[in-house]
Amino acid sequence: MTLTARQCEEAAVLLRRAERNTAPIEPLSALLPGLGLADAYGVQRANIARRRADGATVIGHKVGLTSPAMQQLLGVTEPDFGHLVDDMVRRDGTAVFAGRYCRPRVEPEICFLLSRPLRGPGVTADDVLAATEAVAPALEIVDSRIRDWNITLVDTVADNASSGGLVCGPWTPVGRAPDLASVTVELLLDGRPSAAGSGREVLGHPAAAVAWLANTLAGFGAALEPGQLVLPGAMTTAPFVTAGQRIEARFTGLGPVSVTFA
Image (cartoon, rainbow, N blue to C red; front, side):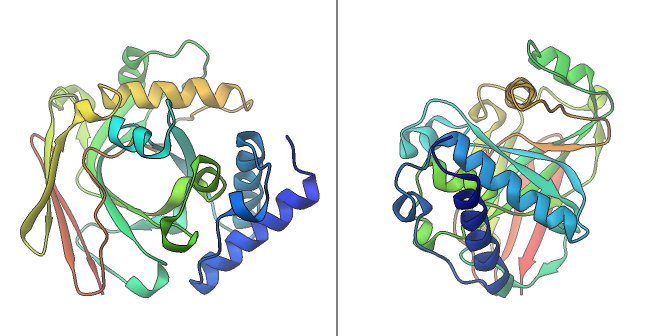
């Protein structure tokens, strides 16, 4: 790490305050020259510790930057990850208050529910499927506490991989689910098609992204545990959404999921 523990704590405070006040800040990469990837994950962990101290529970993880387009956008060659906590979860079909987010986007994803632990290194996509109880159509609400989404890799990592919320549709036991790489999705905004994609956009197979996560967490002395949820990454682009819009994602073989921004 290149930053001091105090600098990491101060950066965490800036991001937490930006989220609470819905008041984005300038990029941490500009405010703290020399901010490295290890520092950024340190900032992320500091904020997750603060949320847990406030009563939140970590319920899983999210993986980001799994599609070639997003990796090219930030000039990286591998994904990143963040934490999912219980206060991020919203019910399928519900309305969420748009004003709680700085500048939200939505991403259609296939959510995994684990029944067995996954501890790296050496976890494969087959291991992931064997450890999965069920999968569900999902919408991830992504939001950046960095002004105008002017982010680099370290900015989004520090900001908990730009996490915002999670909406899950009905669960399908993994043994009855279609091949996840072949699952396609159509994303609709107010009933109009906005984007489309497939599970192959997610590192070739969504389970491969979960395997990457398990192996990466091993380097932090952590693992994926039974009962946890994992979002493996977006199957399409992530359009911006505003108050008054209804977003629906229709997945072949898994069904629909929706949310309205009120």
